[in-house]
Structure formats: structure tokens, C-alpha cells
Length: 393
Image (cartoon, rainbow, N blue to C red; front, side):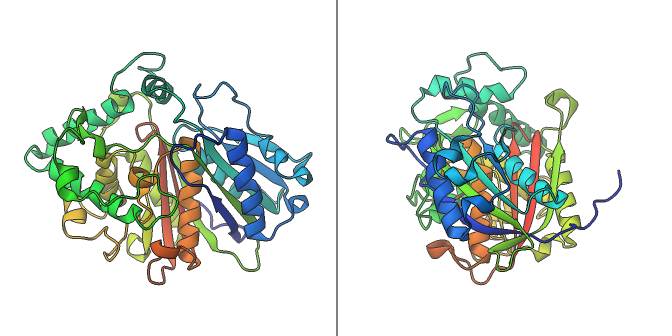
């Protein structure tokens, strides 16, 4: 396969919107979509009649009976009537899939302005129903009942890590440190579901308040079940964007885990390489990254996947402070999925919005000191659908 060509046009994020993530009992999928549609268009200073195409991300997988959200933005803005509107789904990477579809539409020249909305409503469902829905992304377990759900799959990853790298004596503490970092960061995020600094000791210790969920994974090692929505307005050749797209990469891996190395995250490595290559930069040129920490073991493996450390040495990134706010590559300054929450269809859109806010100096209490380049990493399933975007100020 030939290397990707440089982007054919300047694509920018010109407006964003974000609801709180959490248990939003008074909200529906419809109200969440309408809310962020109005807010994103207003933030961009774009009239509905200026939009050329709309993409709506939602995983759903039976979480709500209604599963046809593509036209919901119309309820917020009559001026969107008649536009092509498409629901985009790629498991937990649905949000980034929709963002990338919007970018590709703009690059094609068929659109000049695109609205992207990501949404999910989850907290009304029972734990068993959420588990069943998420397991719809696994071909072996889809349609079955599992008391541990997707946590069980990532527990298998953690156990494989222990075996390969003789990590039994230290992995729990490292995963606890990752969780504590993200919970500390989440305290500065006004949209985060859990704004509480839990501390390393609590996150590293099994207790009644922090029980084992599956294998070596405790409650603090698992992302939150959430409601929420986020939206972006993308524009071709914008005058004053919050951020511009410098590179993007997408790579899918085998669903059958017997056909790949669970600890490699090879599809993610390929997607990151494609995005950095398109942007013409290396890892050292990044000022922050928002990555898919659905479980703390996933963030640990992302450190290694990105090339921050060698395989089996990801612990150094957190133990030596590289991924903290003041480190060489701050990771999940928003609190990540771990503290911010993980309304599945909204997650990737949220990640792009938050990096854009950082690059434009609008991140409020989360703001880093003058970042210029950021990376978004979002994955669906157990590192099956892998998306990366590089954004520049």
C-alpha cells in the first residue's frame, strides 16, 4: 500500500459543543442531539443553511429501542432540512468514525461545511443490558450473558501482560496510578462524570468501595457507563479555526483474537503511524494526546503502541511522570474515559472537541500551556477499529 498523500485541503474545526457526561435522567437521545447541534452551530457562527452534510455517531446496540438517529439534528434547526444525514457506527470508535467521514466529505469537495454529532444514552439500562449491548462488538460473546462483559475481555489482556512481562508484583500499582492520574485530571473538566481525586492508594487497592470486576481489574480500572453528547462543525479552508486537521489514520484488525497478538495493538500502531506520517511529524512533536482508556490496561498498552516506551515498559511513562500534565506528553488531560465518562457514540467526538479547545486556548481549568499539536486515539472493540487524528493550532 502506498503512503498517504498530504491533505488536499485545509480542514478545520470551527465550533464545538459538549454536554456533561453522566447519569442524565431528564435527557433523551433526541434532546442531547438537539442540544449540541444548536450549541455547535452557535459556537462556530454558522447558520444551519450553510451546512452541507451531517454525520451522527451512535453505537446503541439495543441500548435504546430507537435506532435511527440520523435526522435528529433537524429538530434543532429547520435549516438543515434536505441535507444528506448519515448515522455512523463502528463500536466504541463510532464518534471518530463520524469525524473522519466528515473530513473525507470535505476533502472530496462535495461539502464545504459539515456537522458531526456523537451521542449515547446508557444509564437507564441495567448492568446486564449494558454488558449485553457492549458485547455486541465481540463475535464470540455477542448475544450471550457475561457477568463481566467487556471488562472480562480486557482482564484477559491484563493477565496476558502479567504472564509475558512477569508483572504480577507491580501491574496493579501501575494501573492504579493511571486511574489516579485520570481522576485527578478529571477534577478540572466541567463535563466529567466523576470529578473526584481518588488518589493512587485508593485506585491501587481492592476494597468494598473498589472491588474486583474481572481478573486483575478493579472498579477504578474500568470506564464509566454514561449518557452524553458532543458535536463539531468542520469546514474546508476556514478563516479562523480552533484547530486544523494535520493527519488522520484508520486501521482495522481481526475480530478473531486468535489471529493476533492481544498485547500488540497492531491496528492502532498502524493508524497512529499513518496519521503522524500524513502530518509529517514524530511523537516528540506532540503536545498532548487524548487516548481511549476504556480500561487502564488499554492506556498502558497505548503508551507502548505510541512508542513512548518499548513493549513491556509502559509503566515508565506513568511512574516517571511522562504522561502527567507537566510531562513530555500529557495524556488524557480531560480525565479520559476513566473520569470523563464513556457514552460510546459521543466519545470520539468529545476527544476531538477537547483537543481543539486545548489548541485554541479555550480549555478553561484543563488548559495546558500553549499546546500547538495534539493527537486523538479512539478504538472500537478490543483494538479492532482504530482511529487517529493529528490536530494543529
